[in-house]
Figure 1 (cartoon, rainbow, N blue to C red):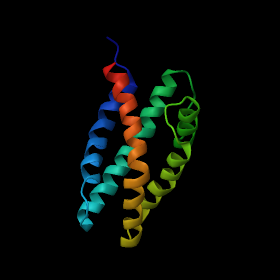
Figure 2: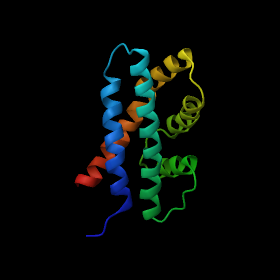
Figure 3: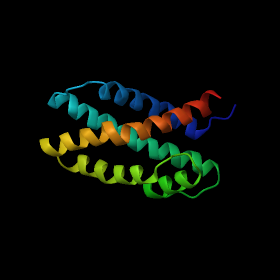
Length: 132
């Protein structure tokens, strides 16, 4: 059986996603837990766009950036809300380059309310493709 790159990528995405899932269930995060949540989001997001890229490239699309990946994923109906993913690019870049407690608290809210549900939808879709 031929190894398919996106399926291998999914395995890594799944590990990061499940860590993010655990951290989103904590009601009141300490600073260290919040930093972990943000780190798990960063890893999940990075692997999510690369998973989408690998999958779409196998389908014949040319993908050169996260923005390309999310636009095509939306057009291909892999993701439901392209704007959420584009917003996540900006917030992910913000978390990588700075650490400020107020920014971290805002990012935590966005991750829990906006980005985690989008990642969950993507996880469920690809879990079905891998298992199906």
